[in-house]
Length: 498
Image (tube, rainbow, N blue to C red):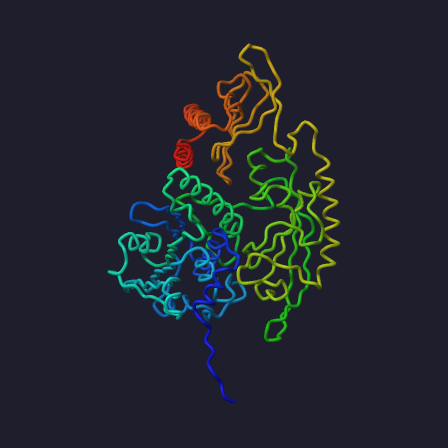
């Protein structure tokens, strides 16, 4: 039978592949997958706003095994060929390109392979340029020479962490997805940058927490840095606290591949009932345990594919979200061999419960929810309510005492909490796992004015000054080491206020 070539139109298909549903955090996570696959032990992520002649850019650099020219060429091809093993994080050979081009119009990759000692390795560079593809309507991969790169590009693409070997991914032309990184209003630009850094950091420390903790067999302990700050892992199950781990179960599942072949494997289900607020070792850790979406929305199922978190929270239609079961979180672990059964797509952002175990899992979840409800109902009445507010006595200007409902105050990683006990010094509790520091402020203390400051620019600056003075006092009284002062974060807040 005769055949005809029917190559896809580059402009139309690439435009479609750029709209897979990524946001900045999930797109960067897809790049981290590639760095992990390259056996990296360090990954550095920089989010750079526009500055002078340098445009806004995002950089992901690692110290993995790197790629030679042929390997880089294949990695840049849509639908790259690769033999995936059962513990790999990749699947379709599309993630690097689709994730990157969802956020930028120009994707440049520089890579230097690891070679034998005393053997000189060469760095290779290739680029996808959306504007060029749209103009030619062809699959032209650009190979820029050293003298065709701008100085700032050379500096970025020769990142220190990948100097000996590794890969640097550079996103530029971000105006479609992240226009506020390029606006002229410095205050708005810095405000957006600070929020983006928080979102990306929270997502990565959640998705890759097992790798950051060093709990994945056969993998390096992973250090991820976002804008110079090393990420601490966010364990959804708070296993360093008084969490109750219920009976682990294993459920057999059959997955059918597109070619019709069947693979059998086990799904490991691990239910956890987290402590109540009054059972946590500190309110700082309790707040951090609430997760990016808050306590109610973080309850539910946590799907792990090869130890990488795909979906965090929600009940996948097994039950509805309920305040009384917010302490229940369930880990569901499976290998990539069961991707078909869990309906894993290109973006790796969701998973579906296989039909064959759905009813059994639903019955188990109902039983676990009762256990979680019992623990929830055991909370003591004098503890903080769901709005995280406390009633304390503050001294008014006319020297009369009045009862005021106030909230905790956060200044970056510093959390100020009112302490109703008078005539007591500042209490300071540092959580090295989350990087947060809680300061308990007694009534009548000079610092208690921080709770009455509102949201104006002047009063936000006063909060920052009080926070800085508190840190200095803590160092003076040897309650905290000087290198634990979050100076970088305080400087960012200062720039944002100004």
